[in-house]
Each structure stands twice: as C-alpha cells, then as structure tokens.
Image (cartoon, rainbow, N blue to C red; front, side):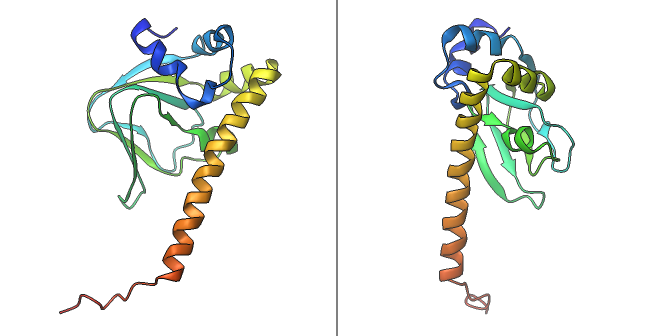
Length: 158
C-alpha cells in the first residue's frame, strides 16, 4: 500500500482515471514502493521488463539510447506502458534526475488484476490506449513536419 502522502498523486494519474475509489485502492495494493537516487536508471533500453511505474516524487529524464531527450516526467506520470501492453523490451532509457519515489506495478500482477476485474481492466486499457494514441498522433505530426521542411545539412557550414 502506498504511503498517505503519495496516495493523492497516484489517484490523479491517467491510468486509474474513471475508476471508483475502492477499485483504485485495490490497484494501490499491487504497488511496490521504491526509491531511486540521482543518475540511477529506472529502466534501460532493451531491458526485458514490463513492469509499470507511477512517479510519486521527483523527476525522470526519458531519452533514446543515443541520448536524445524525449521527455522529463514528474509526479503522477506513468512510465512503462508500452512494455506493459506489448511485452517487448524497453524502448527508451529513464534516468532519475534526483531522488525519485515510484510505485512499481509488477506486470504479471497488474495484468492478472485487469483480467480478473474486467470492468476496471477495460477502463485502464482504454486510458492507456488514449495516451498511446495521442503520443502516436504527435509523433506522426512531427514526422510530417520534418518531411515537409527538410533541413539543409550544409546551411550553417562555414
């Protein structure tokens, strides 16, 4: 169970949006609280893990293996939803920018809860789908913009 000071952060994340308080409490019981220090990896690209994280305190830098920043996330943010859904290796690195407290949801237990509690599972999957679809739309728009406005690699040379 999450500590009281983190409960309100967890209850406001998109994963549990639309669920009844008693169902949210059941999901909270699946969580394992963990603390990470600055520069520790929360997840590593290529790692085979499908656990889901909700950031309770602190900030995390999400980046490509090449080091390009994808996002900086903080309290209430969810991390690992792609691996939870597709059960594939991690597709990015997530490094703690300072001390970070998370609620870690083991994938096996979370999936079992969703399968057993189909109404709640449907809402959670719908919430995940909305967020992932929104990210895909933004990525598509960025790719289209890049294709429409190609950059001249030599524009700033000498």
